[in-house]
Structure formats: structure tokens, C-alpha cells
Image: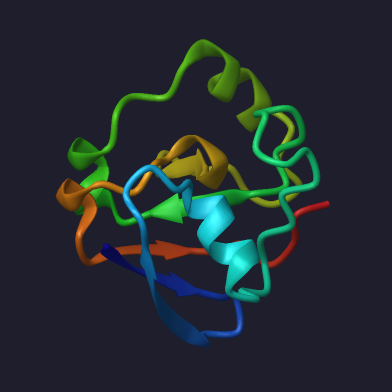
Length: 107
């Protein structure tokens, strides 16, 4: 299990334990985290699981695919250098303690 902390736009922080292989989107939706919709169910087709990864931890996450980069062009809120889609980030031991911030809007 990997501890991931989600910080909603309101500042509310929630830490959940994710099984290895679960996406950060799955973890958010399964645990009632506001701010991640995941309308496409994790198929990298909607950008409603946009999140901001702490810059210091970007190196712990595999680089975004071309498909993810294309979907990030469609985010509803500000796209930043740390923007990622939570459906494309899988929980692993290397991500222990990761903190992600959620934008104010997803659509």
C-alpha cells in the first residue's frame, strides 16, 4: 500500500492508502475525494482527473505519454508544468508519501 495525499482546491487534505497498480484517479474516486471526476473511467480520454504533482516528486513518476500530453491540452483549469492526469499515474512504493493538488474545476 502506498500513502497518497490529495489536496483539494479548498485546502482539504486527505491521505489514502492505494494498492500497487491502482491509478491515483481510482484512489480518489473510490475514496470520495472531491475534485477528480474521471468521467472516462481512466482511459486517458477526458482530462477530468487533472492534477498537479509536487515538483520535487516529478522524477518519481514515469514521463507523460504523447496521448496524455495531448489530453492535457484540454484541461479546464490552468495547465502548469506539474500538470498530469491522475488516471495515468499508478501507485507504487516509489510514490510513497506523494502529494497531489487538485484544480478548482475539471470541466
